[in-house]
Length: 310
Image 1: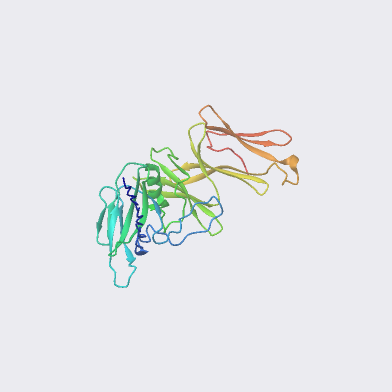
Image 2 (image 1 turned 120 degrees about the horizontal axis):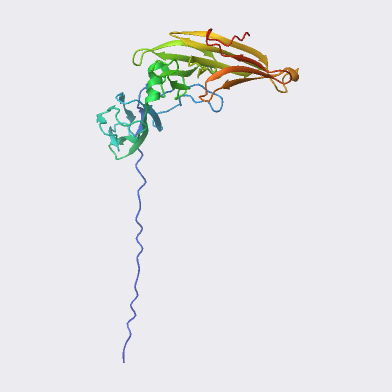
């Protein structure tokens, strides 16, 4: 007789407990006020302003080459007697961390981006990251900063959009000039600055106006102009200046009823048109009424003006 032995196989399921991550230290402070703007302007939708950045929140900076970036780190351990140290994660070349002191002489090519983090490490193994992103400013932005726009973005000392309105040779002397805006009120009012470059990165301010938008132009004979044209409150207004060394000389202005439903006399509305040559230089300013004859004011090369009266 063959006896069959029945072997019972018992499978033991062993549960492996996965420990939750150890809470990291709590950030107290990091990049100082030169980079960490704790105050800002509430602007209407679409306006750019320095962001509010709290300790530990991601920071996005735009900086010029050779600027020294320095700050001191501080974080609180999860226990009263715990100690905190700091580390760098994927740091940019040349960045240094000595204890709680971070330093980096910004280096790279125009537009290059660096994403890295400083990490607070607790003696119990907890880790808390502080992400930072740095973009190298291009030459035009550096020129605008030299003219007064700031020295880094965000710059807590200058409330201004990051990019200038215009950078170029406005007066024809071969050096780049700058037009930029700064915020002049909590309601979004802006002050526009027209800066001409004289010595290398040395500027003189030749024009300032509020809630305006002046732009550089060229007359048909090569005379350099600045045109400020606005359409507001049922009116078309504008003034044209010519550059004369460190001065702006008026060459013509207008104030006319604009076309549109807001005009109580729509038949008297006027469009302002710049007549240009093949090289986009202004030959004349024309007033196009809803009805009637077009008024044309050609550029006078002798008087350097359009002979338009307000």
